[in-house]
Image 1 (tube, rainbow, N blue to C red):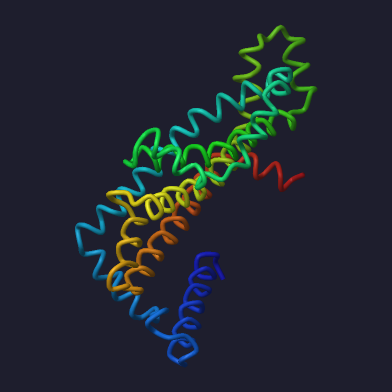
Image 2 (image 1 turned 180 degrees about the vertical axis):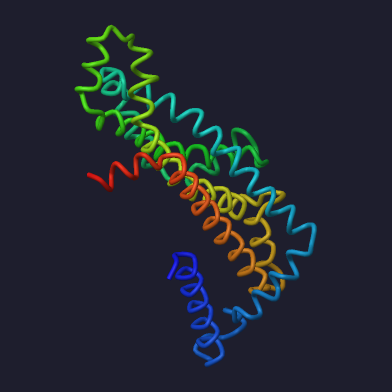
Length: 255
């Protein structure tokens, strides 16, 4: 069975189990509506312009955050990976900043730059740049020294070695970091919208649906959309990675 059909079968099995648990009365419907009700609400929401604007706002913030994180982390990773002295000098501050949960920075970010879209983008950038940075640095450790020595013995400049030897070798590792950061950035965008109460976004929709009348079917419909967006982002990046770095996959399998 192809992976797509296996994933689809697993998803259908999950919904069937969810429906059975609710219909059997093991969980009250007011707290956990059955998937048939949630998916019906979701279909209605997808016909509403306001909900589509919320989805676009979250995905746009995600895309901007990823572009900024890649623009910062890749050059910084190349620099730290290629200059051991600089890497050692910055290790302490990197190890200090990296474990700080981005959600804990929400009050500080709102205080400094306000509660607009800039806040969720900033937090998503902060959280997502670390996997890209570390994968880029790690890639330099995995380069065969013989390749670097051979290039140097041929009189190749440091800049050209970085561009023609190190960067092609590091590219698959960097892309793996980008794929890991894709999910992290989406989580931060939706979480910030939910906690900080953004004007638009999936998180803000979930927050408003959970208040007042407490429409759990709408809350879960928004959650399903966030999960579906995360799945499609990861699946899309994985397919792009397989296509771009097919040579690396073949080399790994051969090894």
